[in-house]
Image 1 (cartoon, helix red, strand yellow):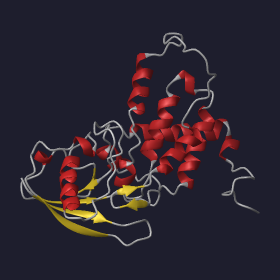
Image 2 (tube, helix red, strand yellow):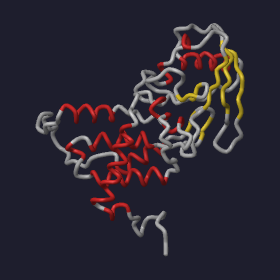
Image 3 (cartoon, one colour):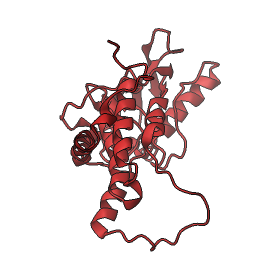
Image 4 (cartoon, one colour):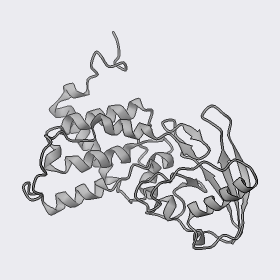
Length: 263
């Protein structure tokens, strides 16, 4: 198989970018998409040219770092998989493939196809955790959790934080990501003590990072490699409303908050 591959090349966040066209020859249909990029880079290195920068790690669909927009779709045309699990047999021989990085204000481009996704880490640091005393591991059956609760928590916890939901949304919203993280802990007894503070802190952090509002068009669910449902966004909205009713002061900016409005 052979392909015409148009790849976004950009030297840095402040540089101008453009598509550069390459030819991928002798591509096996059993190659993964990243292996096809490896073969292009090998040819560039042999010619003394700079290889294409793209991010990856496990190549097993677990880490989500293989963040590419392929023909306009984050992670490519197949549903429920990451880019590293996409195989070249999914494309027609001789096809033209366009590859871009995630496009979002909160994800500035570092180089070529690599973007800075630390904004998601900062949202997690704002409240995506539970506070516990350290020590010996507690027996797994000490806290009884119902089957429905456990399954809901596991469905939400499957989020790998790749950012595909942000890249697919026309508003670059991170609502599905935040919803999954909040719903995961809200569904479990361990997450109850910090329930109100968690949702307000993570929503505030999401706004500070420059993510947009949810457009309710479900692009996020369509491209999520773990097929996380938008029903978790509804759960997030309920949690935020609950926080406003139970602890309205939690929604008021503190005086030390640089984003707080002054009189």
